[in-house]
Length: 296
Image (cartoon, rainbow, N blue to C red; front, side, top):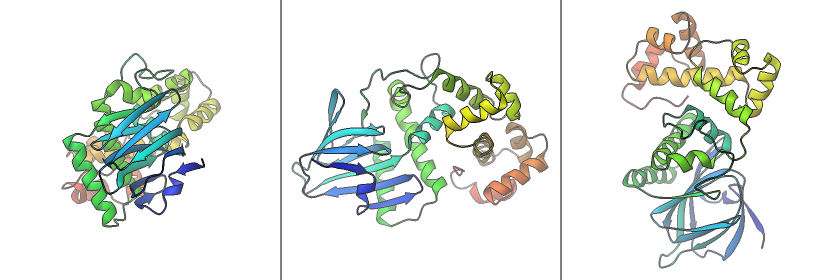
């Protein structure tokens, strides 16, 4: 058997891509037997018709129409069957592990345990099957419609849709969802992330954040880039702008929003917000009051 690398091998399927996020409508009239699948990205798969038998390490599960499965990066053996349907179909969303980890540390859903992390998988076996609720059915329908219409979605919009899905699944399975992404996560990284995420809006300098993590500035920058995959400055600005967009969308004034995001004066906040979004805070409010806040 040949090893199939996904999502690269699915380039002929109908899909929407932007950077490292993909929404793929997978259809197969004659599914083969067992396949060796190498997931180069993490995936969330919704079975629309037929069934998928999934094997990873020492565990397996059977996922049928009306169900889904969260699959972290790694290898698996998969057998797909169309059963009585004319074809096996699924909606698969691919994304890097970093996005899931970033969601964990900024999530409004409370983490279980004292650290919110686990050194090994507990209630799952390297995957998490789940039932499709009525809310998720509408979510799937919306994504498939966008794919069929060949919609051109920006990366912030695709990220927002993915984070929406994370939030729903985290509320459905709060313990297992968070455990799933935290295999072998270093305790020092846990501490660094906790300090960073708890102080996003406090206006601390990088030197101050480094001090809170008991690191020199150079070590803090090195460990931060290892944990987040980007520089502290870029990440902190992005998170502040996300917080600001939600605050402005909720009706808070630019002055209130500036204070909430750690800016000492509104002019500095306005300049940063316009540079990042292309709009002043007031312009952003007038454009977005009738829609969801942007995932910046």
